[in-house]
Length: 222
Image (cartoon, rainbow, N blue to C red):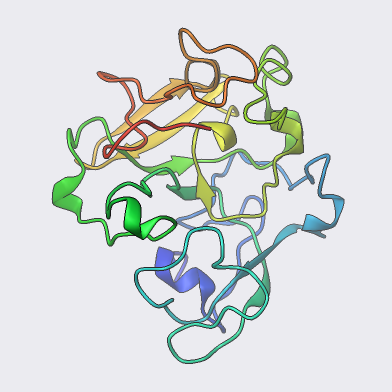
């Protein structure tokens, strides 16, 4: 089959796609991967080297610790590395730390689809860039939040996405699939540098009501 389920991409034995492959999770317009400026080792030939688990993680999982050494999945499996080429990622901003209250800091709640409102504005699957060169020149250094983490230095070897990893290979923009199932095109600049954003602003809310909501449970900050 030339299609592969998203959940199958971290299991062993599934053929992994390269640039131009006729796979559901590969954009035919995407180029061979290039490493971010801060992570030259993340590219291995025609693939990105990604880390993950072969089995589901315990739920709720701890934010920021899913890929650390020593983290095991529900069957006791350790973190594994695989070479992958995936052009689309789940919106990583649907992970508000406030959902379970202050006593549950750094814990993830299992998010239900019915809570993603308004469904026509909440991003679900985001087309991600595959090369550093894909970043529009006028936004490469203008975005730098938080702590001066500019776009060229952000690691691309991950199966997640947000405005910071948004594609720009389709008329300097990319596609987003929303919670209601529809797909729309957006210019990269309007998501990476929305109205009111200033370089280095670590508290700016990137939710844009009426356009794209990254975190329906609260402000979506860098």
